[in-house]
Figure 1 (cartoon, rainbow over the protein chains, first blue to last red):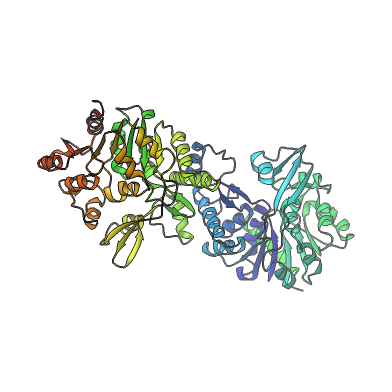
Figure 2 (figure 1 turned 135 degrees about the vertical axis):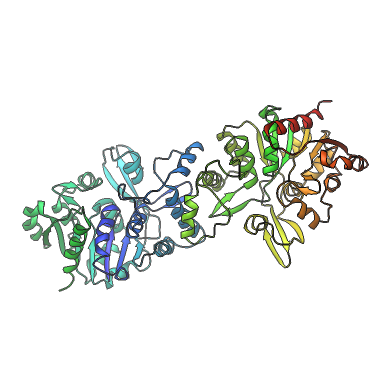
Length: 306
Length: 306
């Protein structure tokens, strides 16, 4: 079983390649729920849904989230009822949140609701939320503390971040620790190390399980040429006192990482990564075409076949 | 203040005329909630919404319920999650149910949520749910008991009904009894006497308040020529042991009714209605055009101006 720790869009793009290289039933994704948020009484899990919709071939290819060709009629009407709808939820997307929320109101865990959604959308991967408990990513800016989605979506990452914190004391969801222990290979996706992977590592016992597993652990740097490919990873790394580079990524994961894939642009960083006890692999990490995605997945997987 | 007891489509059509004859701020509607039902964890109040959407000029004129030009993308996607979506809820309509449900989850009553919806849709009428408690209309057919919406919408009124029953012990919502006591005139809309008006009368104290009020009480018969204009009123009257005619309506409301408006087709029934101690008014009750609606409202209101 290949286990992957995943955020949203970066991870989902990588998975498009991975499912073409490894059968879905052999993939377990541990997904980030630190960005989960409630709107209109509904439980929204942005990262889990991005992964699911993308793998189902239903994601909007331009936005990277939500369903392809979705409409926003309900949201428009919600404005009439006084809601400030800064987080866009399409009409079809709403169905996912209605279903998840009703399942959870009936006593099902987020894990179980997620498994149903994955299966209903025709997928065969295992998608585990990192936790079924409440764990929320907050950003501190000046004196104000805001939910990550408020920083990311509503305020477009404009506020200057002092630090990132995870609210809640979360235990791993069922099968998370076991899947890490029993994996034949573990991939840390090219996701935001601080808020996506970081929120997974903030769940009790996950970081320890990564240190202890016998599986080889490989990460793909989301930082290319000192900049983030998408999202605020570079800003948030700096705010967390980490260098915004592949070296910063290597150091952040140093206690459990075996291999780091970095982009050709960063080839000169390879010796420094090696000196941290991590094997560097230099290849193209930008995923523009499906061929790029498949090549990157193949390169990653080849590390587990020795 | 004119107080009106109302079901769904028949009442809403009448109100389109009424608001052109009486200022909205002088109208209090006591609406039926016996048909309320939960879908996808959302509280749906079909009759209250039909009244609100119609008065706001936003109702779908063909269906008589839901928003004009609404789409059903969310519902289509809900099917993918395994829901049997026999009760159609449009994307815009969903916004109303999301808003109402979130308000109620936050501890607001249905009354308060309803008042907000009415106001957000730009109306100035007072719309009171008959009760804030749970009161549900069920239909007995053979050995099975089904929610009224299941009988009406899912099974298209096909099951043979043995009887109608109201589940729950409901107290009147705030201002309901007071509005009946202090009304300058009360109208029983041309709604289903058994399940729409009947479910309002099933709320403790409402029937007694109607008997006691000094206000003149006028009903408009929903039965014309022995048949219902819309819906299963005739079938359900028979199932409840009541003659499906304007006479049956008069007898059903006999303990509190002063005036009954019947259609020209039923003119020959006037003496029999008079013999019950109820003043019959013969006029056109079918409301095809706005002129029809205004004339009927004027005729009704004229009874309160003496």
